Length: 114
Length: 117
Image (cartoon, rainbow over all chains, first blue to last red; front, side, top):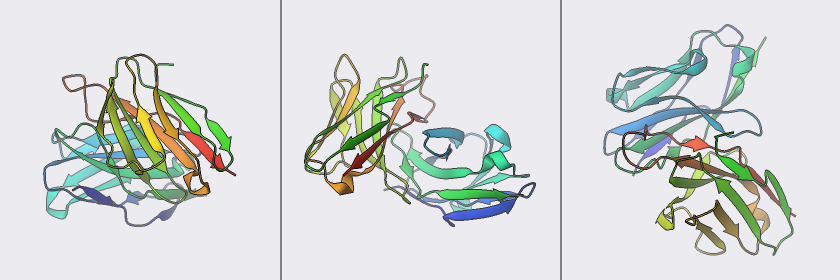
């Protein structure tokens, strides 16, 4: 079985500060890992994904994440937060050959303050 | 709009009524997934369908819930005899079938928000 754990259901940063959202995964097979963003009353939009190529993955809106097998982590970072980054962020895992069925974490609400 | 289309966006039902949620996948996608999002919770997988087949329904409640993806037309998530606990946002997602066009991710609709009074 696969699962993801997102540490911190709420994270608050100042505009211009580093954003770090944590995700740890559990998988018995090599995983595919994803970060999605959800704005209020909208669907989920893919930020970036890891599918066994480069371990440092760059996504949209200046976000990136690094796959660390030794730490079973896939943390999401952005060097400088912008007010428009305020949203809920979900980490998700799937496995190769398992269709595209994703297992999601419980989400992290990011608040950006002036 | 070539994305996943869900309707209705908002649905209000009284206890005991039926709710039908529809999902049209991205054009050319043959796989549909339904997820449920409860307040303060993440998305919980419900069911995975291909045309005319249910592939994985491990997340579907045993009673009152059913899903289909017919050869023609949208996928339907049906909830019979709704209860207040069914109030949630229901998201549909789609993906291509296996092969070179499948890059692993799901493409999500904007959700259908069910309120049960």
